[in-house]
Image (tube, rainbow, N blue to C red; front, top):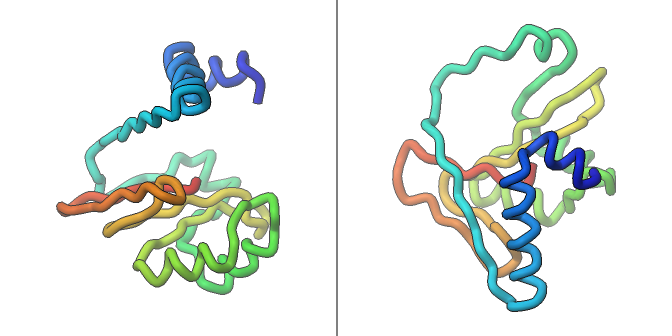
Length: 131
């Protein structure tokens, strides 16, 4: 995705912030993290256009191990096993029975990077990652 596409999708301010953050990490070894919050909703209605074209569901161990064989999905079998052992869940989007996207959710703790983790201390909260 080029800069113009990123600006169109995320807005100029967010793209600029991301560029500055990358430079700070690269040249000063300063890492900044922003955590966006929003209320947890108990009921969500899928837009009709999405419901017609996609299937969304929680992924099984079998789904995830199969996905780990696809290098485009950036999942390793060890990552999958570790996440499931922590109690994390993964929800996937399918188009014509092919997994085209996924997101992980944790109610306890999860990696932000190899060396930095986030811990969830209160309920109802969750952390979404590796989408």
